[in-house]
Image (cartoon, rainbow, N blue to C red; front, side, top):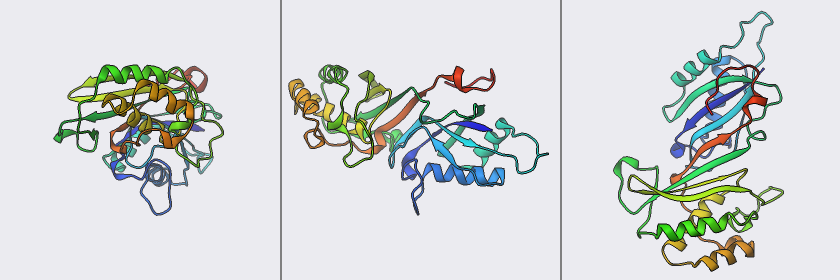
Length: 261
């Protein structure tokens, strides 16, 4: 049977989500915990790949479980979630585990993802590792005008990490906006998919607009050039959060059990 895991993690101590030889990752940590508790090798598939130091407040992964003996008791998802939270380090939290259809896929069935990037021009001692410090006060209205320009395009080659294996750089944005929150500026962006490093490079470019270093027309030119070297710098990872992953739950669940969405 296939199960979804709903979790969150602080990425500061990990080299991203995806397993890498000899490096600590969230996927590797979770697989090891599941394999130990279920007493069989467990492989998990995540809803995406977060880079080193990036956080996830809303993340899903799936795994398959086959009882080792025909007479074994069925898996109790809630009990497993409780045990995982006792076993895993404190920077990973399991919210829920629930059964899904055998063909449900944490990555390919996701219909939309939302990221937030947090910056501040202040020292925030209780938010260390959770935002990026900037040394200027940006023009919020101007950055929101720039964010609306992003919505006019769907080819984000200029903000994509070079030399990746993706087949297309087309992304359909449905939201892009800056807000203020507790002494921070927070950029929220929603799309059906994202390219590697896209949110961090988009944020860096919008901040260039906010500090007067780049005009709105200049932003259009950057997007239309389809050249990563034309865009702004990529912001540090610690300010980035994956905050929401959306699914067509009615087609994925095996029962009417409740799922956090």
